[in-house]
Image (cartoon, rainbow, N blue to C red; front, side):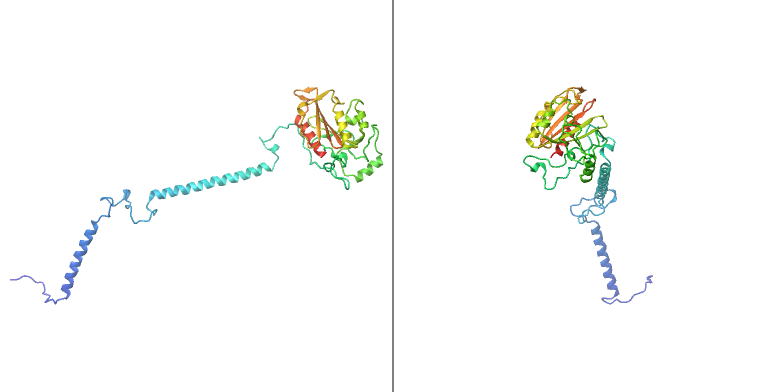
Length: 349
């Protein structure tokens, strides 16, 4: 006796539900088979067991874009480069800012006011801005004349007082006209001087007589050359600096360049002045730096250390002869003397 109690589904028609179920089962078996085959497939040229990178990272994908996230070494390198870029940029910016600030700080004050940059004073003077006196109407500068004739106010061709110096001698108030007299007492009247002061521009020097005192001479031995060479006028300037150096400047104007040259050649033989007992020609001063003309330099025989206590410079350019004398019992600075000689020669140009 049969014990099967399963309901009989009845006859199944071809193409009915029973057929579809069988087809689906067959398709499922095929899919499982494909999945099994796919799971056991290995990428070409990839060794077995290299499915994953160390640390659990996925293996290099031959189709991946280079530099994509996942390449830890590349990412770290980019981070280091980025950090280094900003470090270098910050260093450059800091250098530029500090350099600009230092440049401004250095240029604002005087060099001598900056610690560590101040230079010792070698005796040179601080002169105000040098200006030449105006020329008379229709006149030209001496360089434009074949005979180098000076037509400007002779007093205005003298150097001004340097900073900190004290003027010496009579008042520098302008007088009416130069005096060619050999008498020390020759001078213009007060009324004439007042009139000239109202019409002439201010000048730094003063008129003095063409005589022995103007030459700073001790006797009349050389005074005759002032007369024979027809000195037309003389101007003087003097000061004492803080270090005790005393400066005397003289300018002599003659009727021509030839007369001035003769006086210059003769006066160079004068070995002493009222301030210097004895002197000798400074051989090393040949070719001395001057702006124009020629120069002869004499040093006192007396010295303080390795420096002479007095120095004399005779200048000549065109129809004017100049005298520069510096004296100091402690010795005359070579730099100060050279500076005064050079600048005074430049004023004659």
